[in-house]
Length: 563
Image (tube, rainbow, N blue to C red; front, side, top):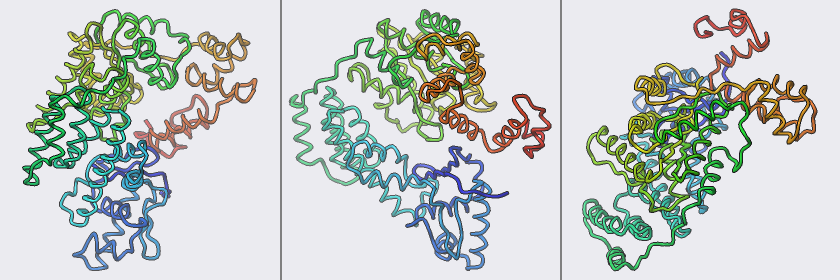
């Protein structure tokens, strides 16, 4: 099989992972350590290259040159087989990582050197843990690992100070807590955290932080707090660090606009055509004041728009709404969409209205199961506090991207919604629910326990497409034009909007598929894997309908993978 150089992303901080063309290579594919070691060594080397003898000596110091060369060639063969790309080339005795490869360590070091708040935030987000934690006792990595950790601490402290100077106290507190996980005895970080806590009105927490500072310094450095820290504690006790003025809570209309923009990228949305039954189902769900609603469908059908309708109803009724967007499950960040929902809520509302369960939670030192239960219960309490006197709407977008920890929390809250004032909404892409996955397990559990109502969105019909096209053109349109758009977009509202937008920008009277829409489809097909891409390409030559066997043979696939 001919190999190619592809856009690759290599993750070494907090985990080892590789993505090729946006597709994460499963950990099960890395059955041998040799290709991982070669890739990591080159990714961390100056200039991303090493002479063959140096690489062999570094990875297999007990082997002679011939045996080491054999190991290296086998490792490169295994690497090409796993990634289906030429990530590493061996030419004239030099092993070199592909120039196009992105490495999180490089991106982190570059961002950490910045003085800009946004760039420092990117650096802190990139540092997901120590360098290659699966190899903790490597003498070769020890110095680099410690250097990266120190860079993270330094960059995080600079970022926290910038947040504090700008009056962004919650981001400051969150960042300092991450610092103290890496360096529990860093006294300036304790001082900043004490000050920020006091300025949010949490005097008790600020004084307890002084106690944690004293304990960490005594246990790790055999010393006590400095005079500056004692003076800060005394000032907090005397009430000299008054809470800063808080941003007033948003009025319902402003909050609704803010969350609509967060969900859809725009403050205002046009009416949903062809969705009368789905909108009625959302209204009935809202009137029940608690429960779970799942909204399923392919991309572009309006799942997010329906979730936004539930948010609007709750806010207009005087309730609270939180929207969690989260990260791809490959990011390795647990509870990402839920933590995102609470963080955004605190940024845009009264910071003292309710505690952030993800910000305030600290492991007990017991079992992981006990800590998980404590966190879930803390989330329940936060929902209950927010839900006085009106219910809370919590939207988790794209459950198909959520990690397993987030899906466990979703299931827990679904059970709690029988009694909590909670309207829990989850959207997902039906075609990405595969048997045996965590999402498949969650959906099965919700169905068995009868915990969730479900809306299955299909494509809109020709009449609804005509109404949408008329809306987009801001006036009536000829039936022939509406039919032509429908034939091209096939009832997908998002595709319809993209086609009409392209017609308006180009001044065209005939609909064609715009480039950005084609790129979207290509990206989605690539995520399905190379075999699917080959099969679809072969089938598309035949037409909208095709004999399976003809497409299979043209794609060069065996019957089982083709099916």
